[in-house]
Length: 503
Image 1 (cartoon, rainbow, N blue to C red):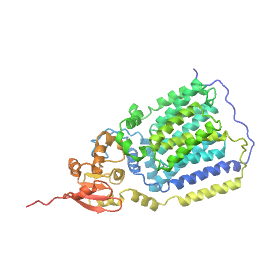
Image 2: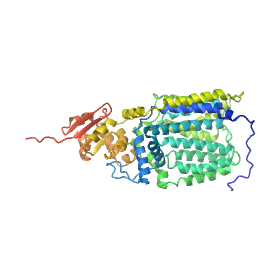
Image 3: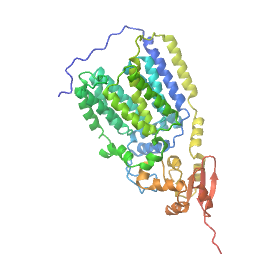
């Protein structure tokens, strides 16, 4: 089977020439500018993710040592456990933004990637549905689901690449198969950025299977792929799977996301973003409404899904119910399909009349708003102080309090970044701490389910940095050899002190 199609690729349709400014200041361009405003407005107060700091530190290590670490050197409890830095490229990008602009650089990174996801999603919805109005609505739904995960973390890189994959798949299946040649390089980058590459590979596998087999099942719409799609996609899938090995750890890095999912019950059962959907979350009701919309369009208005759409959406909807954080990729995958079904119901669709002057004014206002609402450096520092033990850490450093330190789980990332001279007890890298037994020990201790002194003595702890609402705090206050030496609204510091001998 030849990879190169012998069929004639349809040439692009000719369009009536129009002034350059009409194309540049189009209605689509104005809506794109509005999505940038929406992105900045959404994330301007989201400089508070505790995992940011250890991602930033690992990016710094890669940038300054020109080496990807293989063992944990940031904690003292894992015994230099072997690590697989499967997100090293994203972490390097995060650190590059900090090196270029400090806290403002990090916020620009977040705004850029959220804007990129919305803009790419808007384009995807347009080419999938063919109508700018429904594309606008579809992108709003994508934005709503994405609010579960807008943070300065590698997942934004992964989900942007997922959106790019869907664009390339659609262009390659419906317009020109050469677009598909960009998929293997995309996966070579993706495997070094975020574990969501497995979802992308699964989508590619489903599409390749349905197009190659050309199944016709009653109740499903015909596949979108042209006749060349079934010949190209199996080869593209094979090349994309092979491209995953372009990483520093080979098969171990490729399988690492499965290791986390299969061997991290404490992490998946207790960390909020891995929990199932709950009725007190507005996104849950939006999810129910979107699923109901699909059902109404399919069963009441006779708009059908293709087989590959049905498989992908059913799987991602099931996973989104199980894990809250997976609402984000569900939104990306569902938005273009919803747009296609909505567009199919429009009988009198007309092209938008271009008003370049009005559109230019909207774009100008949009960028003025972005400039005005982008958070200042002082605002970002305040957000960091409200979410992290900034002052408590400074107190520990200024008074040269002795370690080892036993820190709150959410405080570990900031300690890694701001006080690397104090190796942490635990931090957001839950996988290695769970696999070494530290996470379970810490969980029982911090909730007060085990005697406080036992863990403190076993690890020779001299210093505790805890949240005021930690369950173990009342126990520590009763221990004669422990003294509270610092307190603020966000953190408490306890120090081990000598107990006077009884005469």
